Image 1 (cartoon, helix red, strand yellow):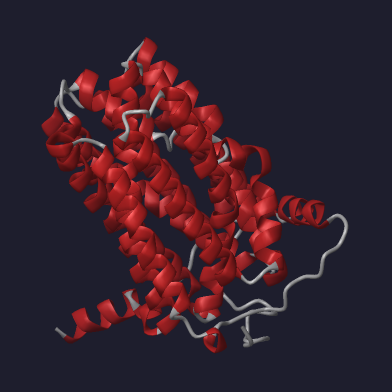
Image 2 (cartoon, one colour):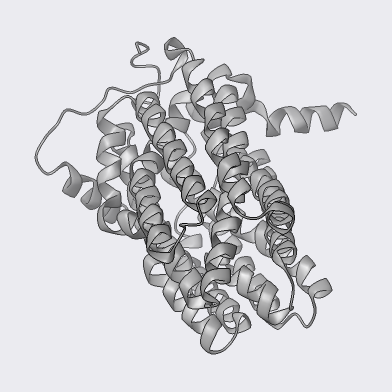
Length: 420
């Protein structure tokens, strides 16, 4: 029992920080609502159009702003108070969800309206994501950053289990509008948590002053560091062709397994279960390595190939659990690597590049995967994603023996400023 308690204490040690605890509680509630909205939107588009490709395009539309200007969001994260930035973006997210609810309630949620609201959501995300990712390093000591990143993934995937499951049931019982309304209310939890934080307990570095060439500096810094460059290349490949489950799963549920919205919710929840297991494993681990990153990419590839060939829903479920474990292990390790390897004054820009490659690749990968699903099958789309992961793993193999990621606080990770 003592060993179990010790393991649990190590796995959840970032929750000892009050600010991070408030952040994670609010995010969990909000993310449940976000996942409910995600499955409801995908199902609504599929219902309106009957086209898997349109599901891919609506998902891609959310990430067009990230593709066009996502790296600039890192400049905002590096220059301004991240808590205040998040208060603004979470309020805007709530207003967007209210608008979506209103159009759906008035039966005016046409395809052009849904595309417009998806682009608005993407524009807010462009600012929100880099600030939220970089904010983690301000809420916990430097030695707890890998743990906090892992717990963030666990929180995200807990919501990924609960949200689609509730969303699928609500869609069958009362329709998609309720999911949009619940999501709008859920942002109040994040806003309340941010307002309750103690700025004096932040681990802040000095913000960088406005200067010419700041964006180029972040790009140059990332490209010139061999480890950061390798991580970014792997993330770009996997993010483009493998991380399109919101496009593939509704088609897999409806056209391959001839299911309902409940089946879609089940598949999303199942992959979330695996992701939660993987996230907790990452949180309990000491430090990231290139070997772990490469192994996670390889496992991700094998799992997606198994997803593609599963003959029945009962066989698909355990394969999707494995997919969830591998996917979150890869991205949580990549995120922790970038957090620890980046200089504090450049961390926002480095993470913005990461998010640009991860999320901004969706406008390219989403339509491709949607087209493959429509022309051939969701099985082929999964297989393409699996091959992309295996290629990414091959990129990491030569570096496994040559690179060992440092796990130490960087200069500036101490408490340099504690004022609001």
